[in-house]
Structures are given as structure tokens and as C-alpha cells.
Length: 345
Image (cartoon, rainbow, N blue to C red; front, side, top):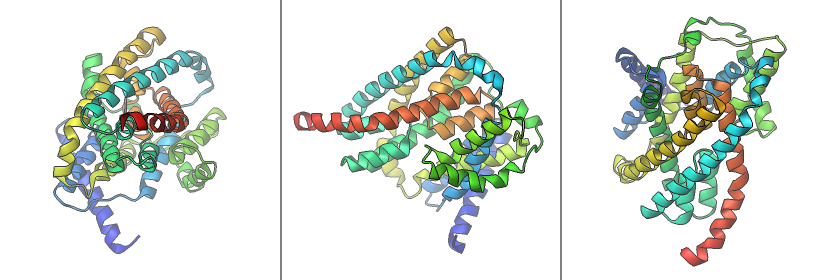
């Protein structure tokens, strides 16, 4: 890392820390994730150079993965039998949501390819790359996908309050924890590259999750971090999300904000209906069902689930299945768009 880039990264973390501190003082939910996100977002709009190296994000995701894996126990198997029903409802909900949001984007003047890939709820990296390959406006897709993730993170906490009638606070388990089995942290420098070698989706999260699960089930190790450690992880992840709009003019972003806001609200409303069905049929709490259905990225939703102790394994597993299915159906979406293009474009 060059000296200039190191300064930018330190500045980004400092801006994020200030945002987190302000949100914490105001008593806002998820202060150390939403605060850094908002602060770096505003800084990028003001023309400030903010950036986060992917390796630092990988470390934060790796810690999150180990924490998730540490929650896996043999007793978890008794719950898995109820998950197929919720997974079916998840996939149906995603299909309905994608269809409705695609129609909205088409109404806003998006071409069919850009509309579909802007509407897909998840797998942002894959959707942007495939959209670019198909000749769509990849920048428009990237902005729509990024705005959706930011808006979901901002919408969910108050929605949880509305759903459950309570306050959104950080997990008491995290706050009371002390460092336990911290020797697992250096192992991330082996575990994450192994995940990349095995071509796992989101290897920086899933490889540590798998290893952490195996160690937890075997009774060998179970990573726990104190509240300040969790805040650091959220600071890195929140700052990273906030830097996604660096280099994009505020005017250009505002041009598509209305489209993305409406699209996100439509997706959240549709998926909230399916979350309520899952709550009624499967019996999981409403906030758990909503977070599992939320149209955000898997890493962001996993971080939210861990930070708020909202059944992280249920949430992460459902987002993982959605990610895998979207990656599997993407080639068929490609073929469908190509077959429709001569008639509609």
C-alpha cells in the first residue's frame, strides 16, 4: 500500500469513527455500522477521497464468519427440518419482488437488461459483471444495487421497531463477551485464501464460517469478541459501504436516487409480506424472517444479524441460498433477455 493510499484509508476510518461516535451519542441503532456508512457517504459527496482496501474488509468479514460458525451446535440440526418451507417462500418472494421492481425500472426508462439486473436483490458483484457483459449500463446497475443496500440498511432498523414494537439495540451477548479463542484470528490468513482456492461464493465470509462451525461442533474453539471488537468490525464494514459512491458526482447520483428509493420500498414491502407468511407458517420471529428476506447483500445482512443477535445462522443461510440460486439462474436470465431483445429493444 502506498503512503498516499494509507493516508486515505486512515482518513476514511477516522471519518467513519466520527460518524459512529455521533450516532452512538444520539442513541441511534447500529451506530457503528450506519454512522460510518453515512459519514463516508457525505464525505464522498463533498469531494473527499475515501477508500477502503478489500483486504481489510476481508478480515472484518472473516471475523464475522468465525463468530457465525461459533454459534453452530449439534442442536441446530433439529431446526433445519423447518427451513425448506421458508427457503421455498424466500425464492418465490425474490421472484415476485424482482418482477415488480423490474417493471418499475422499465417504467423509469431502463432498458430490459439494466432493469432486470438492477432489480435482482443480491449478488451485486455478479449482477454488475454480467450486466456489463450483456451490454447494459453497468454503472446504472451498480448505482442502483449500491443504493438499494444503503437504503435497506437505513430502512430495516425502524421497520424492526414497527414490526416488534420494541427498540433495536446491539446484542447483549456481544456486549458482555470477552476475547475467547482469539488464536483463530491469525488463521484467517490461511482460511480465506483457502476459500478463494475452493471458489466459494463470498469466500472471506463462508470459509471462516465453515471452519468455525466445524471447530464449534467438535468443541475445539468458539470465537467470541468484546463489544469494542465488534464495533471495529462494523466500523470497517460500514466505512467500506460508504466508499462505494466515491468518485460519483452528487448530481449523477441524485438523478437515479428516486428510482432506487421507490424500487427499494417496493422490494421491502413485497418481501415483508413473505416474511410475515414465514413467521406464521414456520414460527420464526418477525424480525428474523424480515432480515432473512431483506433485499440486501449477504455480507451486510449477516453483519446486521450478528450485531443485533437476530438468529444469524438462519439469516445467513437463507441469504446464502438466495445468492447461489441467483448465480445459477443468471445464465438463464441472460438467454431470456437475448431472446426477447429483437422484439422489444
